Image (cartoon, helix red, strand yellow):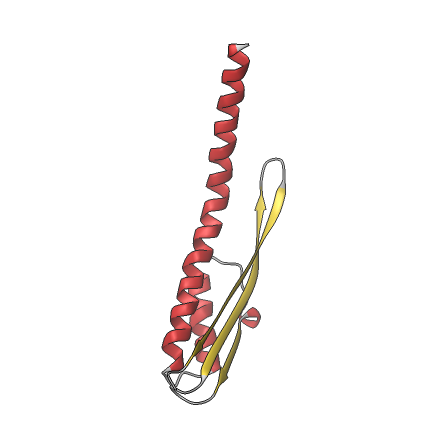
Length: 118
């Protein structure tokens, strides 16, 4: 009976390590991408960057992090003028993971809005 518990325990630990190795990189990339999008919205509110330039910057960051996102899926809306308006950035994407027993899709929706000081 002790041998069965040991084998089951080792199998459970191996399964947890495998799941962590598959899931953690996707979630960490999402965290980094979300942080970069928030920073871009903050900086772009007070600059004269166009919506296309903001979209290009966000797309380049997604490519650096190997996030499956196309240029057209990134939505950037700028309202108002420099320092007085707001910038909204939305970038929804899916990550497909082929796990051993269960393939799954992770759905991420990175979005942020930053308003000007006035």
